[in-house]
Length: 598
Image 1 (tube, one colour):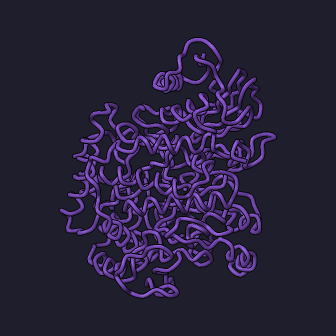
Image 2 (cartoon, rainbow, N blue to C red):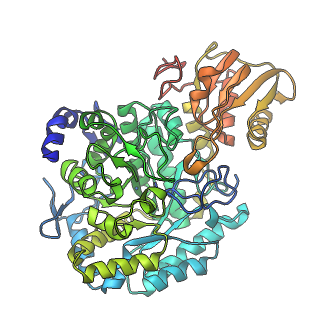
Image 3 (cartoon, helix red, strand yellow):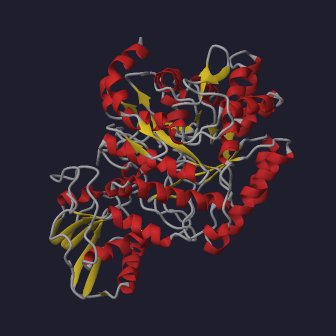
């Protein structure tokens, strides 16, 4: 009944959301999030949803395999053959071939029940000791690990050697156990606020800045560069992009992690992001299905509900996810949200109606489903048995951050012995993951020389999103010196440095007022709306503060607070460039599309 109704509602949507993965565009048509941080700008509860941290250390198809739920086998989808040629373009972004999945299934079939259960788990680890991280994988036979803020050294100089040692030792632990496939080494590196590893890696603008830029090729270039630097460190998976459509200031969790409020813009940007990551040979996990941007509560802290009817879901939240699935993304992450129109009784992570009926059967997704962090309140408070077992029953393939990995393994093994879980289904899940990880290795990892090598691109990308909402476009907005007000010490220091590099004095003259708290408030983190009044008012991160701010010269949305963003801002202040961005979300009386480019 549900599937038929969804199909009836979505005939027209399917006609306009087709896209070409090869071009990273959409036709007319994200989280892993935890707060174990090191130097994080936003405090929050330790060990929740994997993209809950901010700027760390200073600074989750078209053609391909489909799930045969009745047989426990993965079979070829429409038009797919069993060739080993890497899918590309309209055949998928990083999807393994049927032959690759078949090979992986034969390999995982040799695992014991306990080894198979461990292979399905990607755990968090404590501290920064690579040997301890590797020992956890070796002892529990885990599929891999996720790096959180607390795993990143405070010393910039120590980050690259320590993280490369960790990824190398974890991979060796997998190899030593007789598994001849890559470890699942994941990290949240969305850009903007959700940046696990800052310097010496290049910093990338928030997804909302990329949405404001409205340039899919630039977006693809940015995520390819980001992916290359992650690959050089040894990572195989990135928990990005976010395909959530934000509803605006009422959205406490996603904010600038979303490309915007326009469904087509979000779809186009998310497909371009996933394509860029695939270009770098890193598995992109699109999140948070079926859409977290319309939720006004925080799933890190407890149960939240997406209370929209089926037609609203199809017209809003599902549009970007259909586009990314049609483009052939390799992995997707459900959000811990109750989708009342589909299953009012369980969060998506634990709902077969959402993960199997809606995602796999209706949307046709054939890639791997990676849960959001299983230590988040929305799941731990749900009750009804162990969430690891519940997620697998719902249709998940990878269990991210269970609070107690050995206990999760025990629960899975007991469920197998009791007949609650079927081994063939778990082998399918492991096969999807192994085949996907092997497939991405076809793109060679670069050497460490790529680390920090794309500074020019990071500034160019930040500059492309800067949006001016008032004042004269393209003209100098300040005199020879500026007085910087608002923001944090780090914000002001970044602007002082950017101004100095451009020959603009600071300490007197026209006021430039920096407003807005963090764009990311998940887990109860600080997120001040704030307002400003001065000559030039600049919204860092979320732009909504400009609705109630007053400026004698200009209102500017920058969508970020890092040095690259401040360099881009100074270019606009000096009239060296016309702010090219266009609002990707309404701000007070300013509609979507407002800006000098409109």
